Length: 409
Ligand code: HEM
View 1 (cartoon, rainbow, N blue to C red):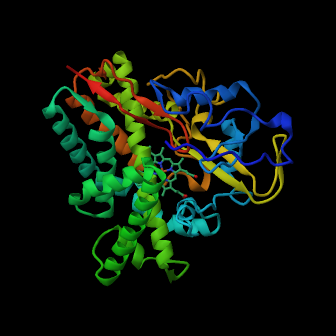
View 2: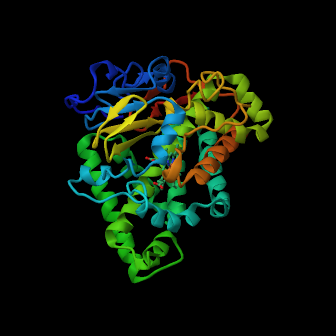
View 3: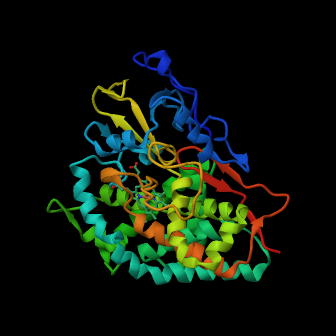
């Protein structure tokens, strides 16, 4: 979690009565808080208007319109012509300008890349990866179980697990695991100087890997990308980099945080923990409910034209926030949204977004989470939050949890 820079002035076209105090960075419960519950804290917006303007709702100090109803968010996310994804977030931090692909491309360009990448993370491809996912989960949890009766879930399991699967997906050997975990930790959680250095290292790594595979292709992800064509032409170096960097970022923190929030919930709810341990066939449905209750991603779009949206005068260039944690607790969408019901059926949550940018890695993410929980519950007896410790949960662009120390002594 990083502190946002100072707020920019509120644009003159925003009516003062539409300005709201709430932000995913600054509202109570969003700063790192021991035993905090930032998703529940975000749900407070449902007591207010459908849409309002939050003056400080991005890390770089932008205000955003906040869309609170799931139905309205779907309208925004579906309409890439009016609400653009083009922001170059990663590159601009390096003083450069190139998109992460396909995330920061708009239709119709987006579609060409999405069609190219879809088969790589299809359910069929994920089935091929599954034995490796299970083997990695079992390996890491066995190591934890052998070491004692307590562990730091994020450092010992969730994060190395997510990084490990990413390496497998890329076809890279595990011996780079520690190095990758270090880069990912610095990039996603480090101080600004460390973040910049890690970003440069990751870009250099992706560029080098692409160059190596261009010289000598093998049967792996990068070789596929550099030999692929979009619209009958090969990809440029910058496009290959945009894809590689996005995959690095998209699937690490998100999966690790989901596993962290799930295990924190189960540690605090022993009856549910025992239910899943005794009846593991319930884990698939339970994981969906936990994705609904503890989603982690705030999406931002940029208006490409003036539009009046549910009474809000959105003007060209305005930022619009569609936060999954807000959509997933919408009472117009879910009965008793605050209640966590591991048997909830017909759970059409938006943790993986909606529309053309719907998460490309959702099949893999789901299997990582379910397999992680299955292997954990098989190996670790009744566990609780270790006495005298308190997990720190936080808000922001990607919600997360740290210092999750579990104990089963
Ligand atoms: C629990 C884990 C995950 C969550 C909650 C999650 C959530 C999301 C969300 C909300 C978006 C839409 C972002 C936007 O439109 O601005 C997205 C896009 C994306 N995700 Fe995930 N994700 C997860 C795991 C993964 C994994 C494991 C991968 C890859 C291995 C992945 C790859 C992607 C890619 C490539 C996109 C961009 C899709 C596009 O723009 O067409 N994600 N994800």
